[in-house]
Image (cartoon, rainbow, N blue to C red):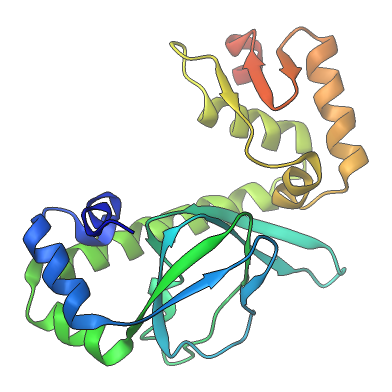
Length: 220
């Protein structure tokens, strides 16, 4: 990883390139690589280090009581794993983390990370802001999961991924992964997507999804 790449991570907002370089030189204990499809950490493992994803994409997921896989989110480099849990009393990973492509992580000791924040107000503020934003995201995710209508969930998802100016996006998940994101079976998701296509609301071509009628989608 180019040291300058830290600038795209919310943890390092408003910090200079020189500060990024010095931070890495002081604190990185190891560099770890994983192949596509490998499990980086498992739900329930104790968090002993801060793992910073610097290359690749991972998905975070958990197993429901029914035995289904529920995807929580996708994380793209550069992002930390579970920063809100690292200093918790019950400091365990709340999810499994699985690579979607080859990935690289930097390993930083908890004590070093804490020491950095004590001596750097910008880093402390960034850490608190990131954790607050993640709490908002998880609250919205919980709200979405609690909704009974899959069509409603999908409509929200499509509206968030597009704008009136850009009415299409490239789906990074497979249909199976998308059904896991919504916590439903794949046939149920396929049925709702076909309904939206038949109603002229969306069009799908491979992984390209286009919203044809945003007003109808918003009414759902």
